[in-house]
Length: 375
Image (cartoon, rainbow, N blue to C red; front, side, top):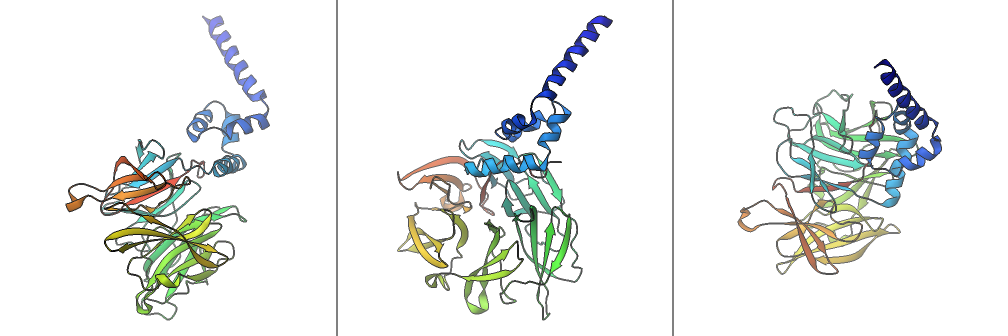
């Protein structure tokens, strides 16, 4: 019996030795081609593999390969009104993968305020204030991080959040904008650094009036900038506010003249690798979606999409890289929940995905797999 156990141990030790002797640079290249699910399994094989996969240089290399593929592997969809309302679906097959397991404080409904490199920035939707928790969540590895409390202690109204990646500093940042009632300096801004795990207040503030609203929770991150749609009722003005994560400076971008004062608020998105606006409008009981893009600091109408009856562009995802649109099909008389539909404008075909959305928050976004936040 002793000899048998001894032989088994020697075989196991020999196998581990062979694994450890495998060239690290070859393992590195092989692992960057694996899915996150496979990599999590590989971490359990031996200490050297775990150390390699947990290395920040490897995580960045794996992420860049996914970015080069321009892959959007999964959809995250708000399918309910409570904290368990977010679910993850396969972006091609539309099969449900899992429900997001979020912290469950009482009477809190969550919204996604930003997404970048497979990580979501999530906080409360209603009655949000400076005490409301903010989380960074990576659905691929089921890891979330609660951000520390802010430094602003005065009475203030929460306005909005933004989340993105600062490439030069190799750091992920969360930007929080708050408003002080009845104060000369009515806005305050704090920036959170994931690398330092701390907040700091900056002097820059959004170049908008005190009455300005940020009507859409999720901001857009694109090429090192954060973008929000803002509405200033006193000036009958809708514009875009941008924030440079490198210089930490705000700027105001005016919309095309034809959109000045329109009733429906456009959404800011990325279309054909350009900053763009999606504006849905009605003309003689027919609905259209106009797509505007920025070319040399000038807005240009790119195209107009005829929307099928009782359908609207899903927010904030809207369009895929293959130019197919995610649409929300609204059922008359609210007899059932809205349905997510994939529309091919070239073939003029619409595919019912079978995914029901929440009437209260028809949120649809996509993300690529990553190892960000992996300890």
